[in-house]
Length: 479
Image (cartoon, one colour):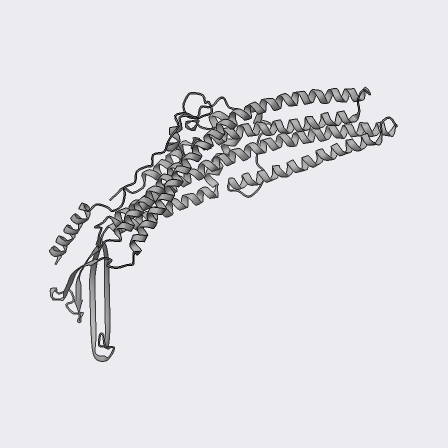
């Protein structure tokens, strides 16, 4: 019996290995790639190959990002999804191998089998093993494993997307906090200046040298500065709460160095070649793996249109007497082969193939769209860096001019040359220019972070990069 089953199993394995898998083999889609970016860049290696802290050199920002990588809940969820996909791959891959089940049982009764009527009392003792195996004639099981493996790799890339997005978000919110700190300081300084002006004008009004309208206008401007301060403080606290959640902590204060944003400007940044995007961006690689998984499912659907071959062998002992149970005379065995295939299904299996092909077409277009958006994001980031730099310089010149105008207007008013309206307008212009200058400085820095993200990252620690590489290498190979 064993020799017979061995021959059948050997024949089945040979047949399975010689059979080709149904459906198309996956090939990465070819998409048009520009030779260079439209926005001029500095020649050199891609910024994505640099560590972000080498450019920003902010120890507090480094600490916050490292803390977020360890404690962020979305990263933890992404890691759990990787483990789920790894387990699913093991589950699917196991179908390619024989399955051995064991059974042991004892029964006693007087029921006649099949009749349900009482008869003589019988006892039965059984100890047996059953070996079952589906011969993968058309590659259905291999394609299923191929799809599961690609899904695992897609979850690894999804985790990388989450990581890069997290780092960009932490850095962006940190820069927002520095900007808000600066704007709060500007509002406080402006509020103090306006309070001093109000005190002087009130004293002049009490002496009858200025009209009441000057007092009222000074009060209006003071109230406006107070309102701006309250609004900025509200935004500041909300930004702290947002960053706390990104760090995996309860909302609370965030340590940072005031006035640091002015010192964070990095040098000119090369962007690298456009073709590097297809290799670096994890969302592009994720879309590629999702397409690979779906392509394999076409083969699974096509294989279901053809017959399947299942082999089953049973070997064990069975007896009505427990005495001398292990005697060779109680040996029981059996071999069976089942060839099952569809005869008429009203086009169900054909429609299944068509549905899988349509889903594959959707993911192909999704891959192409992901690539297009990747190039768009890099171009937008490069444009942002150059234009925000020019805007920031213009805002600084605006602040210088507004400060001079404010001093001159106050001197003209004190000298009786002009009305208080000119002083108010100059003061408003200075306040607005200082707020915009701080905000634009932050936007210039954020545009650099956006370029990091658009280029596929580059700020992972060596330990993180090694962990991601280890995850990809640990994917089980083809059997």
